[in-house]
Amino acid sequence: MEKHILSLSGLGRQFGSTRAVDSVTLDFAPGQFVGVIGRSGAGKSTLLRLINRLIDPTEGSIRFGGTDVTKLRGRELRQWRRDCAMIFQQFNLVDRLDVLTNVLVGRLADHGFFSSMAMRFSDAERTIAIRALDRLELAPQALQRAGTLSGGQQQRVAIARALVQNPRIMLADEPIASLDPGNATRVMEALRSINRDDGITVLVNLHTLDTARAYCQRIIAMRDGRVFFDGTPRQLTDDVVRDIYGSEGLAEFNEAVTSTAARVLVPA
Image (tube, rainbow, N blue to C red):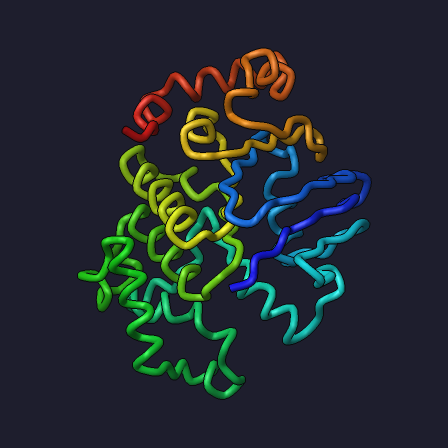
């Protein structure tokens, strides 16, 4: 698969009088594992939704190789969302369907209208889905209803669904925010494995700085919709963190990172 740089140029999104994302210019090299941090309302989720084109920018552009992503419509936009897979905090699974079918939903972008409506999948696609579940240690649960799984298992099903899209980029919006420490670690390890083994660029929004430092090659910090810091974990010093979160936010942040979850969520 050909490798391309993802480029954001002067990207912005305004909601009324609020600039949720404000003139963001960033380049992402193929195969990077990037963590995006910042206080609630800093623009992290809006940034990922802009990249995936779940919402349209007010200004600026998104390019991937020679493609102007901001101009895509219809089938080409659906193909971009296949190439740029999105994982959500709330999993977005269909509880009444079995795990395997939930994963196979990730293949629908390659189907025609009637095939998609009928949820018809080939044996080859089922094999791909089972392999994805096996990578995430969920093959035994393939025929179990998704709603019966734990939160951590459901998030790994969501990752498997994204994986079968054969994406070039994987976006994860607060994927561990609602998980216990053990499941949070499994999810982060799964994302890191996909990044390393498949060479897929991963952008993940995180609340926990320890997690970003432990897993990410590059950390971007946002504040008031703007990029406030862009560098390596080593460059993210305590003084920089204080500037990012402010005095009030830093107090909240320190309370979070000294919690049990923050202490446990560091890989061996």
